[in-house]
Image 1 (tube, rainbow, N blue to C red):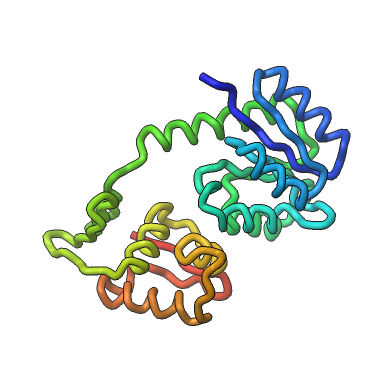
Image 2 (image 1 turned 120 degrees about the vertical axis):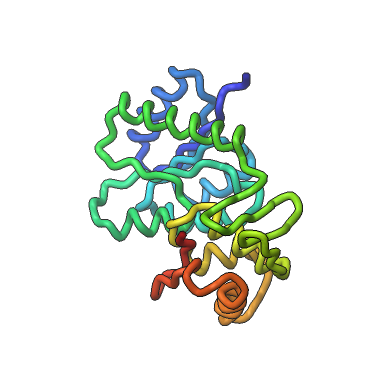
Length: 226
């Protein structure tokens, strides 16, 4: 099996050097970048399995880098985790809301850092191995291969974007998906749609499924509940 490819993006050279040394010692293939803009370019070239982003960086911060990566389909399955020295809940929530998988707080202890990296990579392998063909949450069943939604014995007819939106929300029940993330992952970053597009599709889903499956998180986005 080829070694996992890890991209480190941080504006502090000392941190990059320490983390790169420890990762290479574990057998990983490592690339680095010193700011967010360079990190985006390096990600496209290197095609990493895991990207580790500092949140606070010049030119482009880690949250914006993550948002732009998640808008591109080639990074859908790439693991993204953040490094942050900040303890405020806001920075951590913002990082996860843009599509991050985890965060690691500074100061970094190499052994703990390596354990987190290994756990993230293992989790990704497990998810790929057991990727469901059907999502079943309570009485709602979403067949990803046949593009069919059922509630009990009832088949519910959904338009393509309605199905894509429901599948995204149901893929991680309880997770709050921001409006930007929904736009990027359902419609694509390059598609221009009206500001009310998501609201209209959410309304249609509620009409067809029932009001209680999708919850609005005011000022942020939506989540699937069951």
